[in-house]
Length: 119
Image (tube, one colour):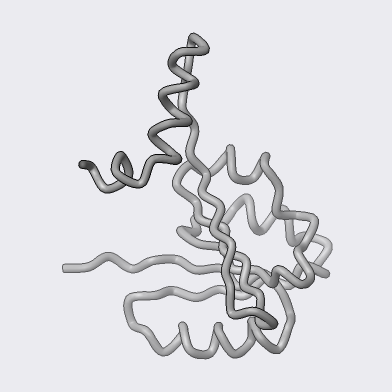
């Protein structure tokens, strides 16, 4: 049994509206739209329990910052670029390192394709 994923569409572009309409058709997704122009947009982002926040890379909202990623471990910020069909994925993941060696190992694990694949 799959769990429902919470998706926030954070933006007002035509591209995001189309993506939101498609995602709303999926029963396993709970899609919420938040307008970045809303004065309470940041507060709503902090209050919502989202798995993913989608935004437009051509007009990234200021409310999406490192503090938000840090406060919500596991959150995915996905920026979509309709001009190139590319997406930028940022993941909120905190790790604790005590030494330069541990930091080096963390960097190696994050940039090594074999480590990511568990090989």
